[in-house]
Amino acid sequence: MQHIKNIAILGAGAMGSFFASRFSDVSTFSTSLVAGGERGRRLSRDGLVVNGKACSVAVSDPDQVHEPADLIIVALKHHHLPQAIGDLKNLVGENTTIISIMNGLDSEPYIGSVYGMDKVLYAVSVGIDALRDGNRVSYSKPGTHFFGEAVNETPGERVRRVQKAFDQAGIAYETPEDMIRIMWWKFMVNVGMNQASAVMGAPYGVFQVSPDARAVMESLMREVIALARPAGVNLAEKDLDEWDKVLRTLSPDGKTSMLQDMEAGRKTEVEVFGGKVVSLSKRYNIPAPVNETFLRIIQVMENR
Image (cartoon, rainbow, N blue to C red; front, side, top):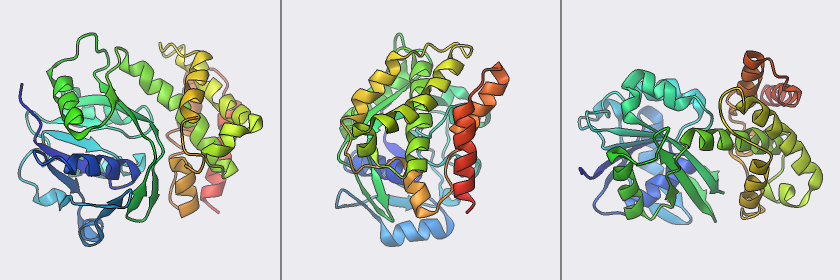
């Protein structure tokens, strides 16, 4: 089995910085952040600081890359994906594996439509409470990172290669048999947790102690459960309880990515959450009134 040596990471936000810090600590890996133009110059100048420690990682201009990566991790906001597709062109080779840890359900098919699904693994991250402030990222819980093919009864060679790399970097992971179900479960969590926190301006601690806050969050999530059934995915009420177990482990001061975006005046991913739910509700003719309302509220908040 060919081992992973060259790792390229697109995105230097909370998640990209987490992976960059972990992989760059392993001397047998050649790890780089892929960024061009002013963003690349800023990363080269300021670097990354993760949990108070400077992260020594190279910055590569996508137009100047001449060697394919063994592993590409895409850790961007969804509205940056079209640009990222072009940035990948010099990085994807015959043996490249691409993992997208982007939110939502659509990034893997989108990347696969350009570079082939044979190069793409599904992935989500759960339980990491990373906070970003400029070039500084902090987290108290590193979470668990799920990845694999759509079905993983027996993990194939590509999955085993990534497992080996994660082992070397000390990154906790799981490879579930049904990866699509995990994707939908995380989608359910994001639809409830991200949108409710953004509208309420509330960190995780509010949802840990307030029954009213949890009720709002769960009303958003239940609409995803209803839509999962016609999509052929088995989500149920017990999945809310599984998220509650994770929620109670997070730092009370931790904030969702959407709340952080809202506070920083950045574009949110509401189209990937509420927007996707509304689209699915029309496809399956299943009402999703709570998500419709939250979609409108967040769009208004973004455009103020």
